[in-house]
Length: 301
Picture 1 (cartoon, rainbow, N blue to C red):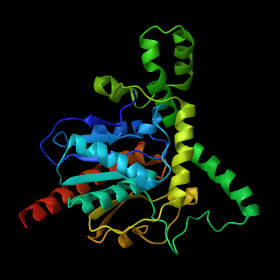
Picture 2: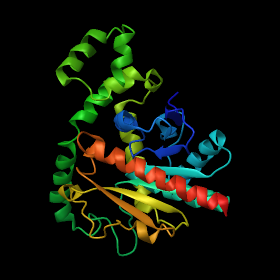
Picture 3: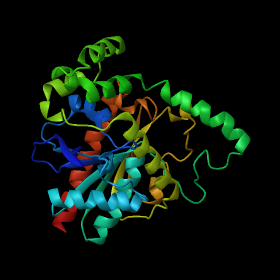
Picture 4: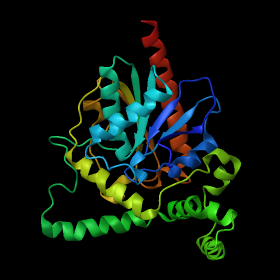
């Protein structure tokens, strides 16, 4: 069983942080941030439960957010809550905030590099002609995958490392493949934190979850919430065709409590890789400290 919610860093006395996975459903690409994490801050991953084959894929972001709120409330029945998401996960976190506010909970939101689409803020791909799409979309795919080597090594290690350790019949071949790919950046993190060595879905299941979530995302119409938030923004996402002229990438329109913006190096894909991850991790800590202060003020009112 692939866990829906599980601790990346289980201990600490500060407000815990709950991070929603990107569209592929898994959060192992964020494991490396634990090298820079505040030891006193609990940190939980909310993965996509439809990575498990017995769960039907989500048809909407709202449905996905509802499932996440349910698992969150089972773990922490009362707020306040600090929730966030990377990429597609930020949209899920936004709708979670809406649903939690309807339950009269206080919420802070932390966003990892995601723009808000809406009227007048359509996706850069939305207004392309079919002929333009034939050129732009393959170019975008090549640009994205040119940065994914470390994540591919991490994914291979996460999916097959345990089989090698257990002496699976395919272990000799898998060991050769791992040597050819090179050392996975995430290996040091997992080996020093055995609780992260959990089951994960296969590549094809992740791709089907990705496709389902992207279809849900295209239909999603964000609703404003009263929460304050922080946006951790990759400064070079224009290299992937994701440039946004608004410094807050539309979040100022949906976070009525205001939004703080932190610029980091790298692009949307490399945000969780060296060297951008060190700056991104520092921005996450500053965002979470701000969230703590805001929630303490609200609690005192």
